[in-house]
Figure 1 (tube, rainbow, N blue to C red):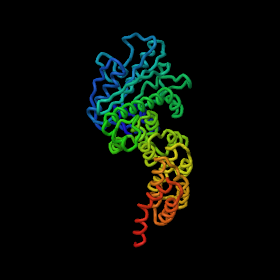
Figure 2 (cartoon, rainbow, N blue to C red; figure 1 turned 90 degrees about the vertical axis):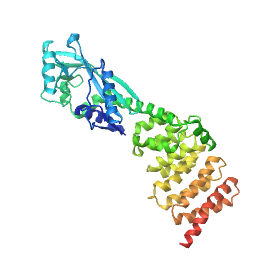
Figure 3 (cartoon, rainbow, N blue to C red; figure 1 turned 45 degrees about the horizontal axis):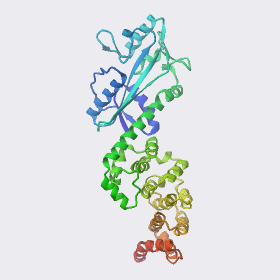
Figure 4 (tube, rainbow, N blue to C red; figure 1 turned 120 degrees about the horizontal axis):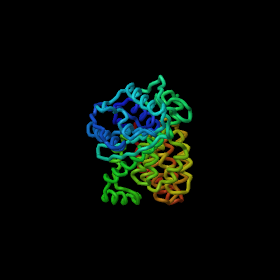
Length: 420
């Protein structure tokens, strides 16, 4: 997932990148300069102005920010407020060194030090007109007239601020100290805001893409439409592309319980960040065969422990958990060509065992798994046909149905293979 920063301030861009890269969101600098008046009365208004102006110019999702400085005991006409870089009669936009000189003099005129805090506002805007804004406050800090020699580009007042827990100038904090302090104050709230905003946007868009006609069609195929919008899977796959590999977003979409959102969660989830506990939780949540199958195909089959989970889930009692085990066996033939035949031979034993289950979504998954294993290679086809024949001759009605269905596809392929 990529966002463009609604600023040319390299310091702000780096701060956004540091906050969002851990959750799979890449923040890029803008390719074009965007002129702004920044005449909002509040930081929220300024952040929205920046975000929407950049979206109109660039046509891509934009994250913008603005800040205000509030100083205790300073007269209102001397308060920086939203115009931290603009002071004097000509409203000149100061560079970093001019800011250090100006605020050093201001603090000196008020006793050499003052307390104060920052207010930050963030605005996330998209080309479709969707825009969300939030703000946060930092804890009080001490601002002093004597600057430290270190400068942080884009954040010159950090050379005049003392961080209360360390007693150090903010500009001289180590990377670990900065990350520890900013995670609670800045990073975590920003991450939460971005993920929440994206979740709201996605659910809105999925709803808009759906239709009652599609819902009726889904129902005819046995899909649970209780929480479905009626969005087609093909549209869902195209829509999901910009959001791939964003773990927190996938988690939030799954929590929404919306049918299409859960399918999308499986598409965009970063399989390297999925834990076994998460796999078990999601599997226990399955309430429709298509969510089960799509999640196994798009996500679970790419995870190293998938063969073991397939064996485990196939022995579960709940219908969709058992189906998940069989569906995962089927999808592993697609995504895990590296697995030895011994793994799939074990699957055949388990499929034969579970084929006696009369439940519709289980026995259909058993047929699917048999066909996929049989189509994996010539050696496995021979063993699969033997398994299917035993099932066809079973005393179990369900097993006979599974074996017969599988043989319809596998036996013609065996004949072709014999003539090659």
